[in-house]
Length: 121
Length: 121
Image 1 (cartoon, rainbow over the protein chains, first blue to last red):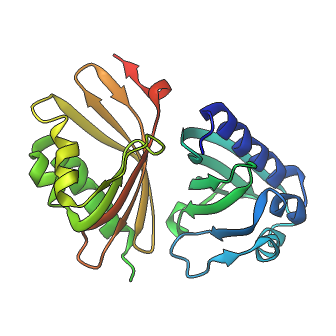
Image 2: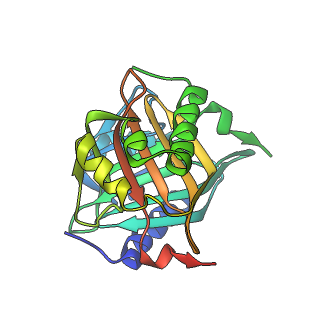
């Protein structure tokens, strides 16, 4: 299974838009039913399944969020990208890796960032 | 198992320096015996084991190579980073993900880039 880079970029763009404009359930709906989410990697918690994933995104429900795709790379059915996310006055630029199933649903998401990468603006 | 971000950054810096200054065997020695390498992701080939990995790096043995770490993120025992690699007049800025064992050896490397990311300079 493989996607064109432009298709994978469209999936990622849709995800970043939904994080800004959608509800936690809207974002979770972009994930496969049995998907996994680790954000941040090494943080000790892997969210498994769409319901747990919706719970993760509820943490930022109602907050002023912005996202911007900075660097995008793709291969096969995977994407890796650097993006900026602002939550209120906080800005982080994680590196994120996503894998997708044949329906274009996210099957695994890993976000690499740490406390030292958080900037107050 | 977990490393401090600075330790992981030192592993990655050593790797990028060895790609420039070392032999294919020197680079392969930074990998665990049973490590895997996929470069580029989706390219259809996963190199398994230190000997196969040395074979991969032999492709660029004797060529003029430069590397530069551009963006670095770490978590747990993993690192994700954007770097520039120049091989002769060709320049690529892949996003790479590495996992490490407790000895600091690379256990898995995945490099995300495609033909569209190659720049002639």
